[in-house]
Image 1 (spheres, rainbow, N blue to C red):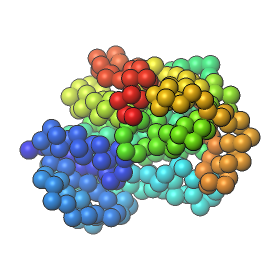
Image 2 (image 1 turned 30 degrees about the vertical axis):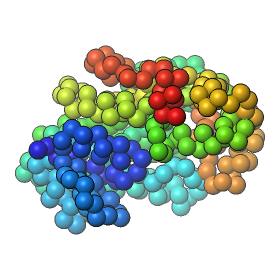
Image 3 (image 1 turned 120 degrees about the vertical axis):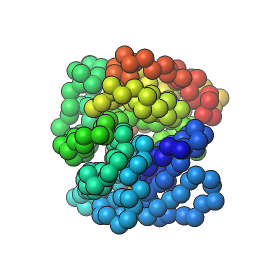
Image 4 (image 1 turned 135 degrees about the horizontal axis):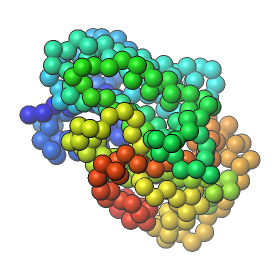
Amino acid sequence: MKTIIIAAGTGFMGKHLSAYFLSKKWSVIVLTRSPKECKKENYQEIYWDAKTMGGWEQLLDGAELLINLTGRSVDCRYNTKNKAKIINSRIDSTNVLHKAIAGCVQAPKLWINASTATIYRDSRDKMMTEKNGEIGTDFSMGVAKKWEHAFFSTTHKNTRQVALRTSLVLGKNGGVITPLVQLVKYGLGGHHGDGKQKFAWIHIADVMGIIAHIYENKSIVGAINCTAPNTITNDDFMHALRATMQVKHGINHPKWMLKLGAIFIGTEAELILKSRWVYPEIICESGYEFEFKNIQKALKAIL
């Protein structure tokens, strides 16, 4: 039986990964700060602090696949304390996994490290692919650059490394869709800012599909865009969400309102205002067939 190790695998993405690989008859081991006993067959949660060794590293020896999702949420105010937590959580976990793999007799064949499509600059004028994408310079983009540098600065002879630059993930029971559904429900589901910023998205089923595709296609290495091929605007997305929920109207949110509101709820307006125009060129060229290319189909499946 093949084994997958999922670091920080108890969140939205991790739960979907666990369910997916269990359905494929894999053994799933989740590394987490708060492990719980579970009677689910071929599934276990093991404690780690995401920065030091502690016995968990022995489980990597002989594992088929390692996926690292560790990282403090960026849904917060970017003050000095939070910025340090955001950066350190990503760098520390990546570094200690490098150390663990270096000590393996039989290292994992594939290591997929989380990254983000936010690494590219705010763009309304150019579609960003892995080949021609322009890396930005603000805090969020800087985090992504440091994260990928920590990941790729060390290599391992028998372990293929892929950084997954994932866009906003849509799926049931969590993720970015939950707060947006609530806005629509209460009549607040209009566009954000001018609504013309690009909204790069992907259905959770295609995230699972892309990970499986990367595992099967050994020529895929390096940084990979993980997003649906048909990027839409924020206005398009909110209109599709209202239509799916059968809500005719929604109040728009001007930029000044979003910036003011972000202060009160402890987040940053850039999370919704940044234009993410990203295209998964490598995945498309390697022959992956998306299950959800159309936002209306994706939302209908979720809601």
